[in-house]
Image 1 (cartoon, rainbow, N blue to C red):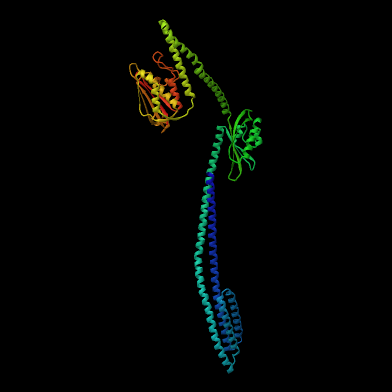
Image 2 (spheres, rainbow, N blue to C red):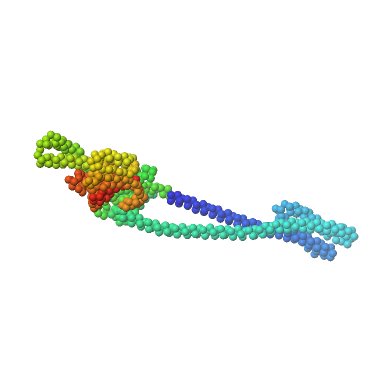
Length: 597
């Protein structure tokens, strides 16, 4: 998940960078274009001014030539002729300059052709006027005509020049307007570009500074985590290592050296050097594990157990190694591993195994005892009971009173022995029976208990009552035994001349409503209550009555083996429940059973 978040953040940063660069280039290109347009507008303005000035210069040159021509006609001074020719040449030069300035203007080029013809015509008449400047009458008439024709040509020429100047002035106004617009927009675009660049710079500075601060914090936290990790390794007696398969480099944590009994960085971390510490009989385990993790393309961890011989004291230590292959952010295959010193645990496990072996042996002995109790002991006991029964039927009346008393005691002891063996078998069954839970109707269990205890109930004139009992998941025959024992005890331990009354009830409670179960919070428990009006008991013995073979009453007053309530407790424990006893001497007893839902 963290890698996905990192890649997503990285993608966002790249997109922001690309977008920022694009906007910068776009703004810069717009600014450059505005500057170019401003420069072009300025050049156009200058160009138009040059054309206008050249047109005025052309008109001035022609007027100058005309003025010199008149001066010569009036004075006859040849100096005016010289100046006239200079003006004529200047007019020709001005025209050529106009041709160059207007070479890309198709409209003005047409006007130039007209202007050229008018200019040639004007100088034609000026030249003729120079030739006609004599005192003869004929020449004077020709001069007059020539001057009139020249004046008309001059008017047309000046009109054409004015027309061209007007065109240029009109274009000049448009260019001036465009120049004004460009002059206003270009600084704005440049200012926007500068502001945006400054914004990008500030954001970048802020981001870089924040990343540096975060990096500083991360490095600081990484240093703390590294110290914590190394300290944790020492406490837990574990170490870590990393193997880069691309560069074939191996790195150890500091505790790896310490666990081998060496100083930190006292040898180069290589597989060969580490193998020198591994017990020779276990080196194949590491080779097989490494081969398995290199061949396996999945990231399933490989667990290995091997022995290490420490360098400092040559002691033998038991190691557990867990290796796993991962791929880092650069696509490199990395094998990471954790080594744990499990020597103490190994030795404890050996002790536990020995104890388990002893327990299994004891269980086998107990099983043998159960077999003896259920077969070998009962067989001679049954024969004894059979012979006692036959003697009582045939020869009991022939015995004297003392013999009859002895015979009765033998019969009671044999019956008690039979009861003890039966109860021991029931207790063994409660311990060893398979715990198969089924839907169990407690009302049906209660009814069955009345049937099974019918003779005792009738003898004691007992009265059994119950509230509505629910259906629960339980081990049916064990719950039946629980009801039989608890109800049977209540009937058996009745007060003299007081008819037993046994009340069985059930209710669901939350654990926090039960004082000794409040730590279970809101968990639900079924509370079964067995309440009687019998002889009761002293509350100080409430815990002892559940102990094996423990009895509060002598054999002469009440028969029993001291196993019944022990069986009840075992049955309740098999159901993960609890049983509590509450008694008041000569008033009655209450047993509460709590079974988890």
